[in-house]
Image (cartoon, rainbow, N blue to C red):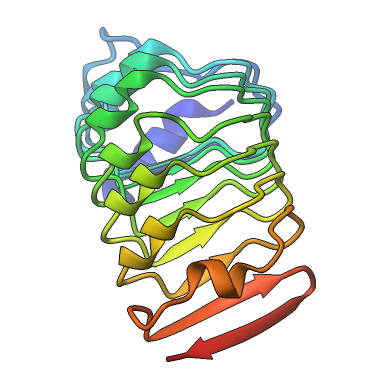
Length: 219
């Protein structure tokens, strides 16, 4: 990997794209490489999609200004807890891995706006998730989640909620308090009638995706 060249590109864009490079580890600059290390700490976007990563190095926690971290289509089974020190992170995309659980320290990412967990091995919604009060987009399609905690109604900024192809059998009544929710994608679950259970006059315009069909309810 021509990592130094990537670092030089990052000087201007504050972005590093190492996607689709068959990486087994994340190539990190040595502290002795003063200029490169300083640049590394200032990046705002890091894309590691489509590699062969089984874990993420704890050294990534030095990325004080990181706003977007994408590690989709890898072999992760969890996310390194120390990465939850990335206090400015706004987007965490870890879809298409083998993640079974997320660390409790996830709740520290109070600026997180997008959490993308599609196509993993989750069997439940992470218990700390309702603490992420800045979330606007939450997706965990293609997992094995069986229920939705009522506390998810704390996500008052949520605009997109997508959990297609799980085994969820109901939507908590508390979800009617999600006033900003505009898209609810819940096809291929075990929900008998999402319209009667989830829609109330508190929703103005809510687009559902049920199975292969999409319909809009305007109240």
